[in-house]
Length: 329
Image (cartoon, rainbow, N blue to C red; front, side, top):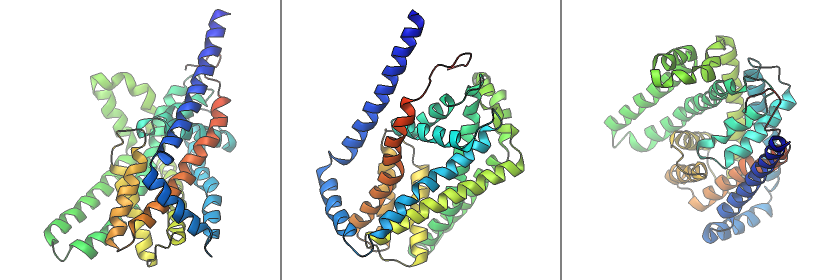
């Protein structure tokens, strides 16, 4: 009884901690930065009262599709461990989103999805989660490289042809390398098993080598679909906040922003937020756009796709069973 009571207490304490930290980070991010919040508040008020206010509603309606593609990916990935319905996969994604919100590099995403599994070997899901995240990174790199190519050719080629050419080759190398690694995950497992200090982690990542070429390709297509939804949302918000560009500039600006954000390491809980805003303001600044308008669109994108779903995910976190009979924690 004492063990059971202690487990229930730890479960309740962990859930309350997640709720408190999540709500605190939301408050400190949005409401304790007066300059950003007050300026954003004015711009948002003007945008909502404009003739394009319906774009905000459309963007919000796309949120379930954004995370739905991620849930579809997790359903496919998790099948190697246990049968997973789409609804269970969606719930796992929401839990991972909430826990990832309060951890650097969204590491809590791993814990959230692992805890939603019933398998005794659910820690083996770490490799599956990594493949899913890496697929999304590859999608970002592929499209983002094209976006950055536009900026290199348009703004730097004439004055710095040598540097520009080097950057183009670098982008090609990064794209080729990520694709090669994605389709040779079994080789990554072999490398881990060959390094003695890392050998103890092989069981947790060995599932990476069990996905076929067709399955990886399907995962990559789903990642590109999710990326397209995210990109469309950003463009709609840019239009809403009166950032006026050509279709090509919209796509390249957003793609370049996502690329830079994806390769900047997260060293704090909210650096994911800051990296996107800084890269967006820089790239769209090159296109002679008002940085405050771009910042407003980027913050709104974060609020809709990360902050709001993280709060919704709290409901599923509170229903989590951290301790399952016969299952490893």
